Length: 255
Ligand SMILES: *Cc1c(COP(=O)(O)O)cnc(C)c1O
Image 1: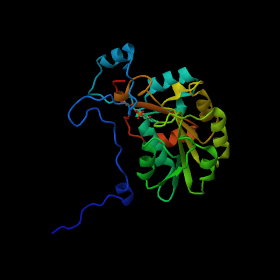
Image 2: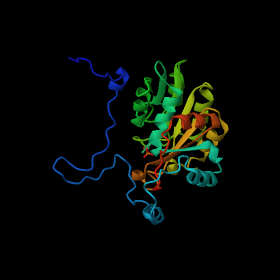
Image 3: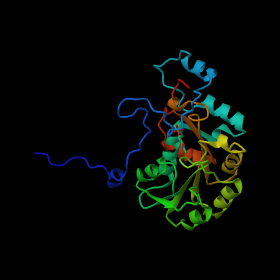
């Protein structure tokens, strides 16, 4: 008799699955779900029209999202070769942890961060480390003090979800300057549009530095959460690493 079963890695069993917001109460009543930050206005008419355009669902989509990367590159003044698209920015956050951290490594984040970060760390066997927050936001000194020689990745959402705090561009620059060159700083700009410069300083840092990855998403501002489209930009060697491990057709043809 077989008594043995495949065993998930112990660090996989340490993961508490991501808990999405609920749309219905226990008695079936519809709730106003604020936790997922879905756009109450929906997507634009142009996006809706583009999505119902008949496309051949039997064919695989462009594996390199060339048209989308080209358009993003033009919009933001970025070389499309320094952009990678993902199944939402969640995929890219996970890929960043997977490419740069593993068993025995630490992934650093402020307390009260986006709940995907500890999962992204644990699923590759790394240890999520939370630096104490200040007024529910990231504290640069505490974060830098928490860096060890095992720290491989730092996650910062700016602005932050779920607390709505944000860091100034000066704070971000100080954080980046204080980090060792071999630590990847992932700047999650899911809500960049709330910043005065709409995240331009973060994009500039990703363009200039060798260890900064900025992630963006169509889910929130463009009301396209269901389309699952995000993108990341950074130095070519960072984008190359993510391209090696992403799924081959990770952005659907509908978009
Ligand atoms: C919503 C959100 C994301 C990811 O959204 P995707 O739909 O996967 O692009 C990433 N970071 C933060 C802080 C978010 O709130």
